[in-house]
Image 1 (cartoon, rainbow, N blue to C red):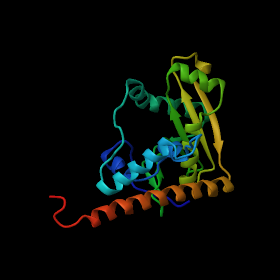
Image 2 (cartoon, rainbow, N blue to C red; image 1 turned 90 degrees about the horizontal axis):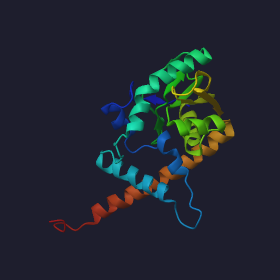
Image 3 (cartoon, helix red, strand yellow; image 1 turned 45 degrees about the horizontal axis):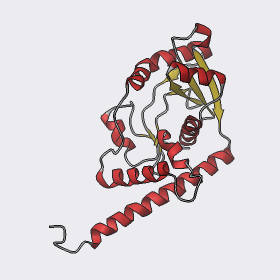
Image 4 (cartoon, one colour; image 1 turned 90 degrees about the vertical axis):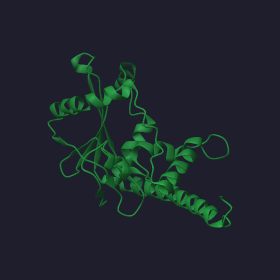
Length: 219
């Protein structure tokens, strides 16, 4: 994968602008969501509408509200990355927004190892959630996020990191390695292409509504 770096940092105005109308790692789970009954899953439908609106208006449709737990996670992310570096001996460098060269897709890994030999995704969750991660694997939504980021970057692996400094030292850090083979990458890209074709079709339908309004009808 040859991606295009659109920003050098994250959570900036330029980073938010770069994400507009694109499928990112954080919405991969919604894109792949399925409804047990007939019909489209609400998360998938809402994501499609959101991307259409962002492409048409140039304005973010995401909920920018940040809870106290989310803010804590943002503030402790550097500490979690340092703990990962100490544990693994790997040097992690920051990265901004990376765009797919031809598709409306991109990602913002929490960190990069080497020349994208690997990437890192960090979570600093509630203690009860960290305990769940210690006992089990990676939750489905985050697994899809990591796979999306692997697809964009072409990295060989993604380390999913859960960190909680309130735990005893030996339980503060949980690292789970996620990989993606070439067949999985191709299959994932097909699903992204299918979803983006639906986004494009709906965007054109909306533009057709605008074009079809008789002159003076909007007055």
